[in-house]
Image (spheres, rainbow, N blue to C red):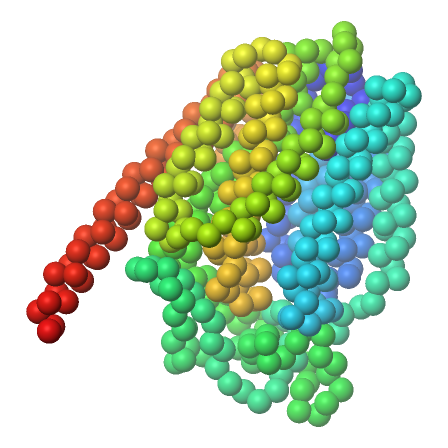
Length: 441
C-alpha cells in the first residue's frame, strides 16, 4: 500500500504521478522476466530490494513532481522484479515441494501484509504516529530484507538459459482439451530445446557435477522461438484461452481500483478532518479473501462447464461493488464495497490460477502467467493513458470509478454470452452422442 506524505490527494497525484508506476511496470516486465532467468534469480532479488529501498527513501525525503515521478519508476521496478522471488524459490527445491513452498510463500506474504496494515492502523489511530514514522518502519524492514537476501545461495541453473541436461527425450506436457476440458498430451513430434526435460524426472536443484548432466546455455533467439511456439500451443486450448482472457481483463481492472481507491476514500472523507481506517480495511479484506480462497479449494464443481457463467456472475458482482463504491458517498459503504470487491477477485483469481496451472509444466506455468500479466499491464497502461493521465482525458476520481464499474460490467456480459454458448454447445453434443448410441447397437 502506497502512502504519500501529503494530507490530501490532489488531482496532480492521480493524473501525473500514479500513471508512471503503470508505465514503468509494463516497460520493465519483459526485460526483467528474461534477466531473472539469465542471471539466475538472486541478482534480481537483490535489485528488487534495492529498488524498494530507493522508493521508500524518496517517499520520505523527495520533494517536487519530478522526484515523485522517479519514485514511482523505482516502485514499478520493484513490482516488476517480484517475479524473481517465486522463481528463486522454485529453482532451489524439488518439484514435489512446489505446492508446500508456494503455500509458505503466500502465507508469509499474507501475514506480512496483514500485520503491516493492522500495525499501521493501530499506530496511527491509537498511538498517534505520523505517516512519516510508518514509512521509516517500512524502510527499516525493507533494508533488513535486502541485507538478508545477500546470504541466499546462488542457484546453479534456471528454467530457460541455464539447463541441466541428461539423455535426450521429448517433453510430454499436458494442455486442457478445448472440447471437453480433459488433459491431452503434446504431440511427440514437437522438437524441444535441450534442457526442457520433464521436471518430474530432473529436479531443478540437481547439481551439475555428474558427467552426463551438464549445464547448457541456450541462445536467446532460440529461447524466444521456443517460448513463442509453446505459447501458441498453450493458447490453442479454448479452456486455457478463456481463463487467461478473464485473468488479463480482470487483473487490469483490479490494479486500477486498488491503485486509486484510497484517492476515492480521501475525496469521500478527507483524512485531515476525521479519523480513517484504511489500514484496518485492507487487513480485513485480505483476511476474508484468504478465507474465501481456502473455502473455494474444497468446492467440487465442473469449472469446464460452468466456469464462464461463474466468471460472468462474479464479474457483475464486482461491477456492482465498484459502482456502489463510486456513487454512495459514505465511507463505511465504500469500505464494505471494497472488501466485497477484493474477496470476489481473490476468489476468482485463485480458481483461474488453478484452472490454468493444473495441467502445465513449470516452464509453461511461468510463461503463461507472465504473458497474462503482461497483457493485463498493457491494457492497464492503455486505460491509464486514456482515462487517468493528464495528457489524455485526465478525468476526476469519481468519473474514473464509474468507468471501472462499466469495464467490469462489460467483462460480465462478454463471458455471459460465451458461457451460454458453451453450455448450449455442450448439451447439443451430449444429445448427438445419445442419439447415436442406439445406432451403434
